[in-house]
Image 1 (cartoon, rainbow, N blue to C red):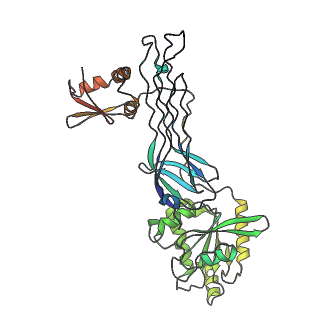
Image 2: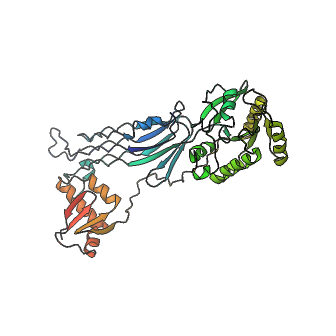
Image 3: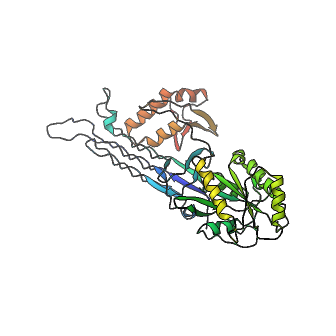
Length: 425
């Protein structure tokens, strides 16, 4: 079974909790705080494995969660960071955020890695909160929650040369005749429902990957027939071979077939219209093929046309040699997806305070802010000093004043994330 799309859930590991601990040594009666930090949670990392060819494994496992970091230890010892969770994907996998559609990465090369969910940092132990005002801090942070999201994986076959054409024009027969691939061959439409790959050895030291792609129909760019299921796989090929039924076995016009295929490729992605191309005038062993070939060449004189027969092998080697020569003249495999925007590199911590919003949910005042929601998750409300710190941060950020302006009064319920508490003047 060939699977070229999958939707999976990924979650980075939570950071380990910092702890409250004190330095305990003989003759040191007031040793001070010595609680260590928690370890970092593991990242979820996609890794390209050239041995994989489909996304079928994700039919059976859709959830991937990395381990959380260890909690901090006494004597200022940090907890151990969790290992990354490595998820293997085939080359040619494009990754997007399922909710926003944001492009995350294009995984092409063996060994290429992409972090799709970062683990949370470890919470700080009480040794971090020592100050001139508080020499014995009873406060330690919980670990930061790891990132979580649903992502979409889309596989686009990596091949040097792609065979395109209407159903039943002989693409599978041609692939079978020039490689060791064994595609399913029959006389009915859409025999090939999934891409088939084969390695073509033109001569010693010269070879390339040839893909037999599912047959096109008119309207494929709008999703008709196999539509986009076909067209996504042609994007990465460096050379396109148009396979035309020159004998017109099913009564179609070879010239019209070529124009329709070109138009479908252009409407799907304009760049495909400029891709180097060859024409395989197939089924030349059948009656009427020579007459159609002459008319085809007169109508399209600028094309490189190779009369062939996939069934008998006539002219096939010349076609494959021409494809290999074209590949030698071209650069690397094209990537037609968006490039990842370059981000600013930060070499030191730069504190920033994002804006927050206040809205009413019935009688409840809801404060919306990713930073404040994370603060709630990392605060241990069983610790008096931690509660005081939380209140101080809200006041410093202007949340208290904003709540008053929004109409909050003594005893009103305030919600930040999953936490609800009473507003107190």
